[in-house]
Length: 175
Ligand SMILES: [Cu+2]
Ligand SMILES: [Zn+2]
Image (tube, rainbow, N blue to C red; front, side, top):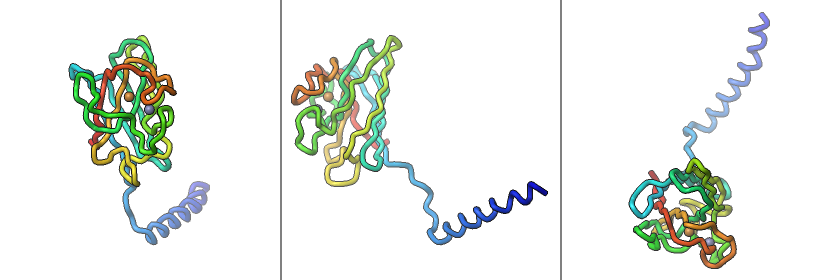
């Protein structure tokens, strides 16, 4: 008996939910727009993976590096989705749709620290950026790439943070 009385409010809630669904039919919730990059070194070996997810107010970036020497490395989004070995200069400069100085580029991301296990992870948000929408999306006509450098980014030296050579690069793709 106690069970059936406790079901009454639940039934009412479900009826309410059904009513509101009937008013506004029925799209399955779409996953947030996302893109990916597989980072390769100059020899074509896989060195990590990044996921970029468009969220309200920014783009969330997650990076995992594997098989690196322990250390701290600069990590950026660069403005061209082309990774030509060995130096990856084909990826262009830091993503910078606002014409800012280094340290304020939309493509400036936190340094990634790799431990003794060879693994490093970073999660960061690019505030005010978009992946596909708006006037200055990361994935514009010439795409974008994620790049990891030989040295940490000092956060100030214009235009590239004195981060040294580009060791790994991944063009951002939608699948
Ligand atoms: Cu870079
Ligand atoms: Zn920069």
